[in-house]
Length: 432
Image 1 (cartoon, helix red, strand yellow):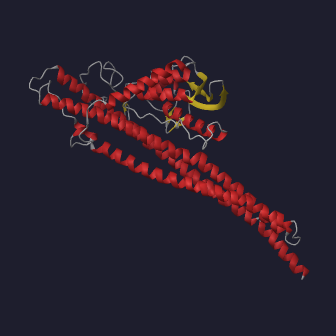
Image 2 (cartoon, rainbow, N blue to C red; image 1 turned 120 degrees about the vertical axis):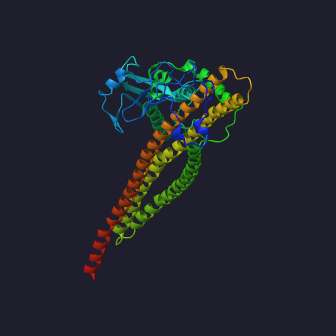
Image 3 (tube, rainbow, N blue to C red; image 1 turned 90 degrees about the vertical axis):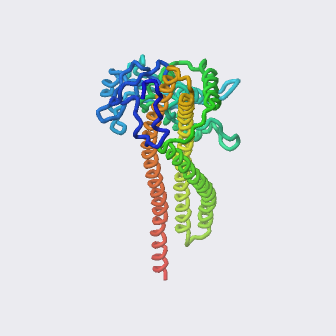
């Protein structure tokens, strides 16, 4: 095959995805790239590979000083040492003549030389987080961007300024930033740096919205349609569809359980005082009746805690992963668009009689984009799968512990009633 002949796309045929030649692999011969290749990083950077065989994405290379400074911050995450810590805390309500909104303090500690200072503390509102995510999605189209909590809530159903809602959103925003900070590529994004260190982002808001709209139009009006996804990515899409159904079912049932628990809690709160009022005119049964009232009260408190845990800890994780699935599906669609573009250009070259040298080069560049998209998406999929296992293991373990604690509290409450009944029985026997 001559140098000017376009290569067939390995991922669009019968070969498995593992057989694709990775453009960033050290074992791959250097590809002849055009300077305007879509994948970030450029042609001048050297291919790197870790000792364990993991290729390093050169789109956002880690500085040597940052690698050395990792030793200074010894917080461990899955065996990897961090050099960037981000937390979201201290929500505050701001009231002005035009609007009412909540801001959050974003605290950053880092040893990376990309930052001018080792620590930052800035206040950000939700639209600033939204600006960041839009910028990440625009500048890193081949990567999975963690989701934000939903912006809009139903008026009259949820008070978005309530303490519970604000705290739930704070936790979600904190998790969003931590996921970005832990990502080997996204954490080096210039917009993420600006979000953590710049004092004012307000002037960038309108531009971010327009850019995102333009990007969406670009993918919708591209005019390319992929023939078929490679087997591995088709399996990803099928898994996401099934996972969405499972999460939807669990979320629906969990909300019904919370509703029923809340109704049962209201009944218990009315039920307990009845025994207390009854004891006031039953001298012989006063202590046992007061004991039952106390048991019901303790069970009510335990049930209230269990219901709050499900609302504040269990449901938010389910909803986060529903949004995560939407993000992953969007990345898959973008990958399909790039593959379809390559297949269309390749087909045009094959059936074109006058084959100019510039056309095969354009096809080569398009194939490199597909391969880079495949590599980035696979890496982010593995990272997402790992996070999912950890999150759901922690979620289900916590749910088990909370339920055990609930039943232990109820059991302890009713067991405390037994001595009262025994004493009353013994007293009655002595009287007889």
